[in-house]
Length: 406
Image 1 (cartoon, rainbow, N blue to C red):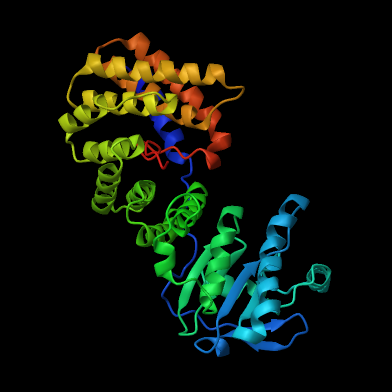
Image 2: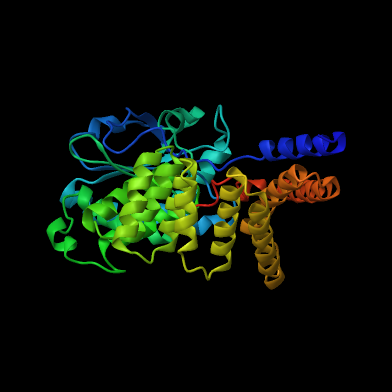
């Protein structure tokens, strides 16, 4: 290989390998586990043993922190307000217990002025349930909490019934239902199962799972997806998102079954067709991938990029170099069109451009076109360096960004 070309390739792959990936972990517990014992002091320095209530009463834990900005204030305090209303209304009737586990600003001894701020915040917002201070992040770490706020519901049998990272607007109807379920007040499942459509319980589980997936919380999306499909096994979009989540969790066989089911239920589900093709590609079933992709009606620009790129990979891996170049260049021209119609750079198109330029350069190198190879490598390197500052929001994984979740 030409020395200059080799040097550019090394630099490019180093840049790509240093860009971080999206986290999929959320909490060091799962639904069905027995919760860990919690003993903490409240705001008046009284000892509270939360675990005394496990297995006796419905218990809700909410791990939270002080709002960091005015924008975060409403979002953070909404979770406390929401649970405080239920606590005040139902504690005497159902025995509901709610505990707010405060996560301090720093490790070590908590300054008196921080405790004062927390007391003022709780008093001003009229939060009725006890606030416990997790000094040293002890239970924050034992429970494996990453997203704040996070809500953990423990049922009367002493098992974790539901775990909710964050507090997205789309999830609030679901969380309300689950608090009622925790207290034994939920609508019987048989009545819900006959209801389908955008306002059904299964759809609400799907929308919540979609929120979690978009936040990069892949593992946490699986539980609400399973609940969605328990209520409505014919919801193709839930099967598709289940497949994507399973695939990103390393469960390719289960993902393939989910995509096949989505296609069976909805032959026009292009996302499921494309995702299934990605799995066929991983199994080196290149003829099946080509046949499937060429049968799809392609309209959406971002979908077209994925189809042409995947076809290019198929042709590259079957030594059809000229056809591969044609597909990669077509994908690149669509990206150019996308960006010309947008006022700013699009993360989807940026991440694909890096790989397209890199793969095209490799193909031109095989054709002994050194000038074109170096030109493409330089462009790929520049795009990847420009992306470095935005890497936290643009996960760069070959084929990992190809899947369509909706």
